[in-house]
Length: 413
Image (cartoon, rainbow, N blue to C red):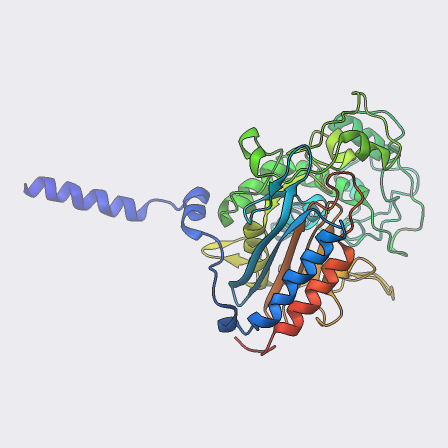
């Protein structure tokens, strides 16, 4: 019995001393807790206006439905699902665990943080020219473009590829990138461009030795416990994924033609963005899928200075640099590294929040983070369902105004 007790004690000690893996960290973290909004300085009566605003947008057919999450001081004070996530071919009610095509939130939830991780490790430097990592990124005025200019959208590159050109696959996309030319002098003018983040996604691949999706999953989503976040979601996620619209409509945006016949079937679990689709679903500018609770974990990590639970993703000064003005010169368009601060894309800030940072996604997703009030607003919709005619722009600002006005103690903790 004595020996048995010694072995049992040794086993317990070994268990306690075992390495904490990314998966074990994820299992122990969990999402943000929910609380009575009054305990975090939010007026619940005023937050009720969010319900009316979303319902009005649904009635005007601006969106089929939405999930809205408001958090402050590390706790969720408001989380509701509205309307339907699917209208065609069948109606399905929206649920708070719905997974959305995040579209351009991929830029700040996958590409930006992985680039900044590589900066922290000394693997890349933002002042380096892109061709240091991608030697074929030359010609057409691209030689002087830096990683900093890609991250701030001051590269001078066009907004997107010419999708009237038929191509398919990751390598084919890179060939299109090599042949691109600048429209403007790098570093002089803000032009929001998916090409910037396609290039950054490839830099992450080259510099880390892992594809963007693998690196982001291993270094960000698993440690944070973001179980509903990934590129190319598996088939068993499909019932919870908000559908978008048919592939033939996504290609019609840019008069593009794929090598495969466009389908009339409404997309569900397949990336909406036509360029990311042609690249196999993984790209630096689009392709990520996620849900409201996971987006909240990521936003809280940023408010915490790069840490959530026991998982440190970025260092505090890195987060500060990402979310501070980094636009070159005297530009009126203010961007951080990846993040929007004050441009024509800042609708999720509304009219009352002062400062902060955020991003939008073409499919109807958005997030705005307000460090001053220690709060953030997540609005996830599939406004392109079922026919691409919806518009969530005004709703984003309206909800931000309601939330900002509901904060009773702006500086409180």
